[in-house]
Length: 463
Image 1 (spheres, one colour):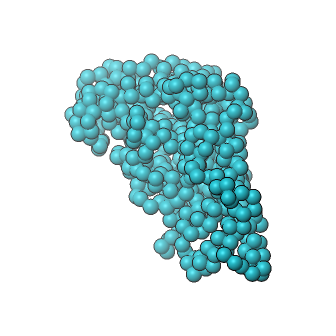
Image 2 (cartoon, rainbow, N blue to C red; image 1 turned 60 degrees about the vertical axis):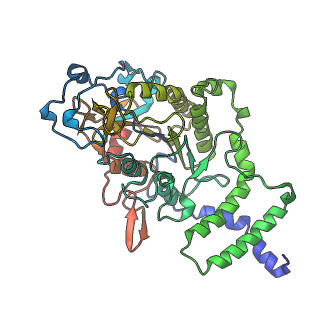
Image 3 (cartoon, rainbow, N blue to C red; image 1 turned 90 degrees about the vertical axis):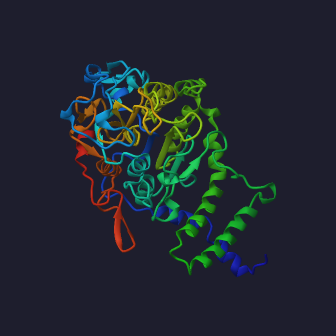
């Protein structure tokens, strides 16, 4: 394509200068943050708090019996609460660390890191199906179309990295609610999560063909951007086009950054062994956790690491033999997660990196009973009414337990923490006021927490 000198200079001038200006335009935090980055370790399917972080001796006394009427009734997805019998946990709990937090033998490695974590045993919400619960946890609403937490964070804070996406997703297969879990919803498309693969080539087709070497690719991108921006002037509300323009520039810069990111040859043998990369059971999730550390080390704002997918060996959805399911899933993730906390702390990154571990809900103290969910007497149904997650780093005081569930782990009864409160607190730790982080859509100002959310949890987390 022939162009005159004036057109070429006009187009070429929109190259790296535009990129730098665009990166510097990110808004500032509302107040001083204690965390700069987030790693969310999402246990897809809903891990049982009763077999991991919330010991309930009462279950052993009630094993095989119906739940006493004093506990009332709750709506479950498949089983009928008043017709199901209690099943005790097969896990052994023990106190660990100076804090003496009780952890199940499901997590022998993580148990040695309990003094770094704040364990919240009183999470709750009202979404008892996977889709509703996943949307609540990842998008702040059970309804479709809302931006994900990572999108809100990058919209509010921008990116620290010039050469990598601000929001990266490391998947372990499909997600029950689909890609909306890391989508940008009604926010501009540039804020959606970018999925990375494991290995030396995190993104497919990143390298240009040989005939585009040197400055030819830069010239082509400048010209393409000029035409795209002219096209966009009459379509200002089309954020997908804006995202496409940005992605071309980012991909150009990533051609150097991404291969270096995926090259683990410079990691020491001791580091790889720490994460469990020398073990076939842990190697896959170990690679994801090590990649998460490398991403935040390079300024990526929000990293989401998924354990369990809708394909392969499944996820944490313990309808069938919950104990066996959790032993299998924990064996793959325990050492890598513990190593991530240890490695971040050793490198001075844990102080500014907020690490969150959890799933979309917990599991019931009663048997799934082989009902419509395809479970069996050793399986547990979904329980959003009381369950556990933990947080570490980013200004949080470790070695503490916040809240509790009732005697059988059914409901959060002491200091209940709703998902909206969790999101408000995460934003607060990042320096963002959840009531001010808004986006106008269809005549209304929306926010991640909608009209809900409290931040008093932050004071407890910081001790």
